[in-house]
Length: 617
Image (cartoon, rainbow, N blue to C red; front, side, top):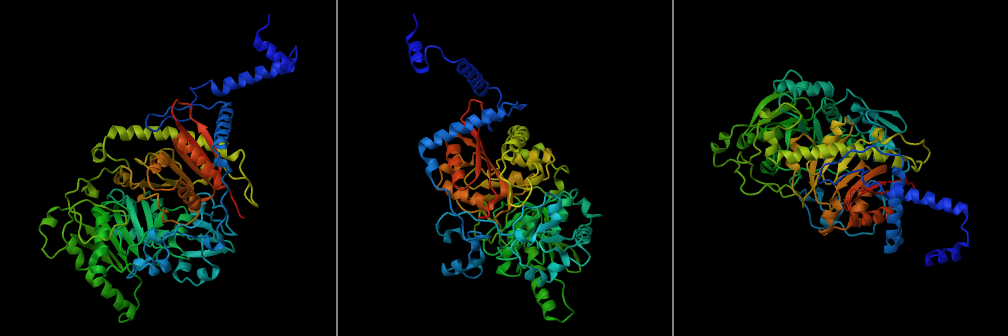
């Protein structure tokens, strides 16, 4: 006697199921076992534990597609996919940078230079839209070719501005109608950037600029970096040079530097502190940077002192002066006169002067601060708050535990155990580093088949090269210890990472900067101070869950991510299941291709890999 279940099956399929149907059932059952039966083949492990490396099998794509189909069904059932894709912004926003609007700032009441500062509170909650690339935009050349040649259509500078730019044409030349080439030996002086760098080293008592590292100089803040010539040279000798310059509507220094694949961000020396902690850099460099150092009763120099590590250097190169007695020469002398007097009040000493270049060194002698006059700049009291706070009239003294002369640090690029102990448990740090080394290998393994197998062909171009040839500018939006940056270096990937530490998370930025990596504090409820299309990859580990408890809108965040990500760029997001589901819906709204990957490690963590398409209309 047949069971009731078989009777029902007979009603549906007939008395004898077809052999082909039975064969299909067997194949389907085997496929399901393959897809869901192997929990040991994890792509990643949780970021809070050690990653387990894996050799990927041929059935990996089946597993990934099953996860994609599953989340599509979940998204459909929640109604999120019915939200419409965002429209495009007008042409006037091709190079739009939020929070920098001089006209709006003036109407809001800012003056005395504050109108040029960053003011996100003035930005209205407008309609969401996606910023399109300019008509002539082209994917940047791969590094290192992209360092020396860029597409002129990718930056907001016209041919007339280029040809009439004066000093710019001394360092750049127009190869073709659509390219700008940067001469590798061009620089800030008539003798070239290499000679200029060697001159600075010799003024510091070194044999050549190759000895900067031995002298403790690993990180340089380059103010008003021009077109990145000095920074590009410093990168070539293994130094980290971060460019900052004020917002410019056209011919932007920051935009050009980032287009060349050099670390840069918008930052103003006007009324507020820069978003870096005290003792962040070994050298602060200003060559024709246009900062009025003699103004504001020395407050701008006090900010430089805050940023400099003990024993660090401030290098100032003034414009080339005209013959004696000219108005320009008099103006330079008037500016330098207070600079010859004020540094003594903050325990600096002028160690060298040659031509138009001056070098001051911050003291390493703690006794200097106790022996100063009462009329000198006072020492600060209280916590060092460095996220766009007002300029401070006091200096940070030697009471900080990070008061370590740069000359006393280990000569290697890695921090010593004693230096790591200043920031926490060295064991946690090394465990994090090993985990990220394994995770990065898996990222690269996933990016190639997931993105390029069905890559939307860019207009009028051939298929792209693998990602390790295309990625140069990377942003880690929630950098933690800077482990991803260290993993890139360990794998000898030719990238640099902007390590962003959210202001509401544990502040590990001092550790990141001490390791010689670029980094910055940032509030992700606000736009990031950069130009559109300036990063090739965005990475965020746990950021979405972190921001869910804040006042931030995740849709605002995704629109901002789309603004700063280059066409054909990638976003890699690692977070909890609920946050990833919501993120995938937002990614669809901003027209990104997105894949969800189930890590198969028993946790509720998921990986979302997205690519921004090359959209022209």
